[in-house]
Image (cartoon, rainbow, N blue to C red; front, top):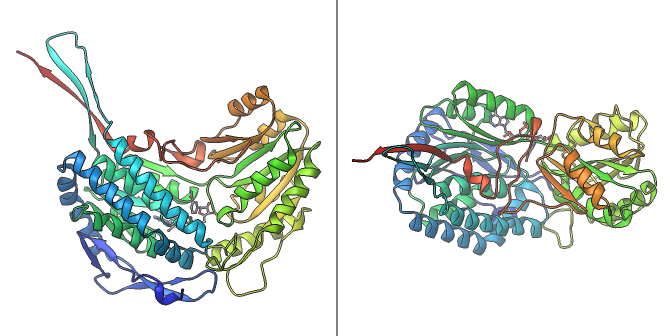
Amino acid sequence: MTTDDYTPLQMYIAGEWCAAENGATAPVVNPATEEVIGHVPLATSGDLDRALAASVTGFQAWRGTPIARRVEILRKAADLLTARAGDIGRIMTLEQGKPFPEARNEAVRVANSIRWDAEDARREYGRIIPSADDTLLSVRKEPIGPVAAFTPWNFPAGSPNRKIAAALAAGCSIIIKASEETPGTAVELVRCFADAGVPAGALNLVFGDPAQVSGHLIPAKEIRLVAFTGSVPVGKLLASAAGAAMKPSLMELGGHAPVIVCADADPVRAARRAATAKFFNAGQVCTSPSRFLVHADVHDAFVAEFVRAAEELVVGDGLAEGVKMGPLANERRLKATEELVHDAVAKGAKAVTGGARLDRQGYFYPPTVLVDVPADARIMAEEPFGPLAPIVRFTDLDEALEIANSLEYGLAAYGFTESAATTERLVRGFEAGILSINHCGGSVPEAPSGGVKASGYGREGGPEGLEAYFLTKRVSHLLG
Ligand code: NAD
């Protein structure tokens, strides 16, 4: 596999693959080699206006397509994605860095969530309400209309697909601005839907200057829903813009997931499971476990096993055989990771393993375990979004829960205990939208994911994941 295997980068507007009308592009870099592997087109206002117009005609065509046919097309897209998962996985690894088996698996998982959303949309029944007078009273669910969606680079297939699959399953059209750093995967994902027969305009893919694109699309009269995955500060910006235009929005933002390991937990099993989740995608996951609160009784055993697990991981180019963790996806993450570690160590933390970037080409940072991390270290409050595990000890569970809930984030939380009563305390006590006990569960098509507090609102996945894409219409019909 060479960079020649990278896909040609184009936008997809009104059923046509195209460059920007003024030819503007930005380079795309392989984070494992720092080589430029392609050039992504950057939309002009004219390109975005064409996408907006197409989203209206595409919406009319798609919502008018019988649901059985829509499901057939979406299932075909899922089958194409499954068949192309190897090629898409290689493109994803080239532009994002994650190990190839994980990248290929992401494409397969995405196909399953398209199938689930498509089937679930058939069950938006609405209801008939017994009425007090001579009217037939009903509640209908209708697709909300054209959606503007913005997605990041950590799950180059999974993140855009959450929005595309839900919008199309509900009968909406969508303009998606996927990440300019991982555009190749988005191109190939959209190609599956296009090849499967999604009509022109129902699905449009653009790239560009993020602020310019969102500033153009969110207030546009054609757009009826805004969906975003990314950082809290950008989420607040886009939610405000949507609010100013009186449009609903779906915000899937960052987190800083606490892990509470209780005195009665098996420290070795807990460390293995937590370390696997921690270093998945080099820690660049919004639900990544990122603050470890470990009871003093099991602290040393937990740390010892966690360090063993970290040191076993083979770090390297995601295309090389046996690699378990790739580079960070971009230079910003590498710099941010270095800064968080310097700050923690300067304030008294100790790096038991890792702690400095690898001396080689590429944005490589090793799995890093920090102990004795003081409460005022930035890493205890800022989402690390990298392969960093700060571990602190506690003795009182109420205090641990207080620390866990002390930040503005509320996305995922994890607890390890053998006690049913303690499990219930954790389940009730954690302020989070996603909870796992005795493991670190990942997202699945059939259940909702999403946050509370500054981690956002709305849900993706499960029946809840389609809710935002429908409007509710009350209809009363006077009989006779
Ligand atoms: P960032 O805040 O600059 O950008 C996050 C995403 O938002 C990117 O995809 C970017 O293209 C997009 N974006 C930025 N400004 C935008 C705008 N005005 N309009 C529309 N889209 C815009 O950060 P980054 O350096 O790309 O990532 C770092 C941080 O982002 C991480 O620390 C993490 O907190 C967060 N993040 C979260 C997720 C998630 O899954 N929730 C994914 C990626 C990044």
